[in-house]
Image (tube, rainbow, N blue to C red; front, side, top):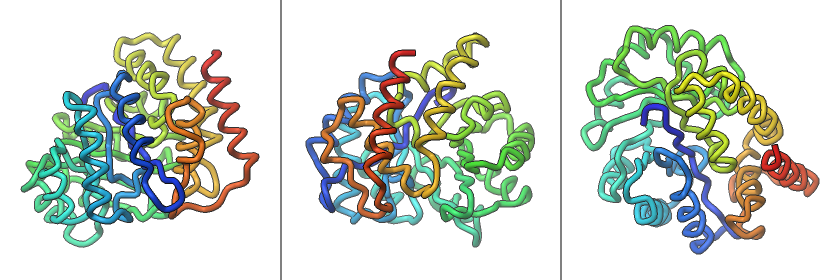
Length: 284
């Protein structure tokens, strides 16, 4: 996964029903992008909200269409971890847990390699302190950590400094609102909801950082910051619907497969703004 983009993919819904055809078309489109893989059942994919059969169907579709790429599955229990393994996932993204954090990661790691997850508390995350992070990263099954603070550059800086004591672990950016800066701080991969659309632009950003092309990196970072400011904004839970709108604006899924049963309603003007942002990004 090093220097790879791993989009956290949303699930296309029509009303309260998964649009299976839209999901298959989306997976086939994503398979053609320069990604290391995808993350299913994550926050963007509403993993904890989906019924077991729905989760299994989502994983089955993505595994079938991306046979040679990494599939990361969100997990908050041994049951989800076992289902992920049976479905052909390659690794787990451990939803944060406050109690017995290191033991929890070790338990998940009995099934598959684990990516720890530092998520800001407003989204259901846990503010792991340094000692807890060190214990989590010492678990043999843990291969890295995704950091998604949303807007706390100071927290990301703290964790990036801590990661220098774990050089074999991968620091993975989940920072849609400051993706470029997080790469400058030492992230060597990105697992982000923003990767669901404008995927090639974000893959190009990671490539530019890896090869040291500062001109391309600065240009692409500014371009993506503008898109993130439009899509990752209050109400924050609306970002999932906004990303589905962006995927539809790319011509990948139909306009009526962009519902998010658990997200807030958003005005039509926001959808037009997302469409416009995607169009503008494509002509730069």
